[in-house]
Length: 246
Image (cartoon, rainbow, N blue to C red):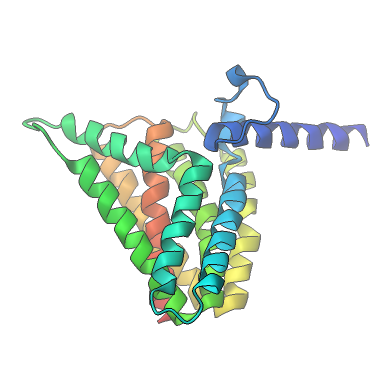
């Protein structure tokens, strides 16, 4: 019983650290404790919170604008805005900075705008894909929106483990994967096996492509790389779901 209580207390502490690290929420943990590897592997759990907030806002705006043909697009904008406010644009900012940093490190690079271009294209693509999903199936959209925020926070851990095995332990990676089970099952219930299957396939391919890109540029795994991979995998997850939803 004591061991169970200690394990539960450790889990709550790690999740609290992750909340401080990946959102603007500030539960009662000292600032100096918020950057350890324990908080890193709870990132998919933070995806639950962010995903539920995104779904709530999307549903609310959709109800308020029911019957308006622009409803899915407007709901996608406000849903994304809610996640940005909750996380402080942590991953969006990381994508911008990491793209600029890696491109500037290349021989002959001068005044690159890769960070701006990558950020704009991914955000625009994300909004368009969410609107397309909502037009195909509102139920599939809700399940996908929730799962995307969870899975896209797990895949960067896989990339990080391949870049630097000491950054994320294999056992911790397996435990972090448990956060993804329920969201993917909800997707299956909403749209059949093809919906989570295609979304996972495209997101995994995007993660592999990012790993190849980062290795070619000798990038080290840090919060900037984690955020950049998260953004790419989230958009790729929506793309796969949109293809499956038709």
